[in-house]
Length: 210
Image 1 (cartoon, one colour):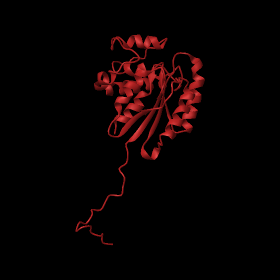
Image 2 (cartoon, one colour):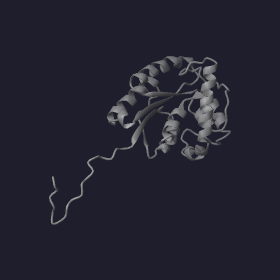
Image 3 (tube, one colour):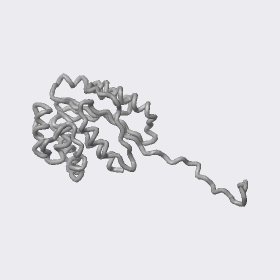
């Protein structure tokens, strides 16, 4: 059917397809760790928009539950390429293994990927500088070693993205090597004993590969 002219002007055919929004990566990070949120938020790009689930809980299963609610409340859907990650620290207490197991099962049921660092997230930062299978007695020991490379490191640092970006490929490679090492000595993933290790590389690699 011929379009009706208005005052001698024939309107252009409009594109009825709405522009698709960027995919969203929604992350639940332990409430006490501001650094992780400050660091990861900088990875928003042309493909992914980084968001964080609300709440200050540090219990893995409750973190998953909060993330499930945030995923639904934000209208996210895998068909749009949206992703959900829950970042937890294994710490150094074997009593946390039960919590990690429960969180893993819950995450698998809801298309969420549980990302575990053992003993803590700072292992990811260390991977930017060296590869070491050294076992740590506490999270504080990891931070103490990290300060050899990042003097004055604190949990509220806002400059790590810029400081570490040039070494991102080294970090990914070292994190994968740590994972391989733990598997070779028969340590079980998502346990306190799977240490040192960090699965943060999975999040970063996914975001920067697009």
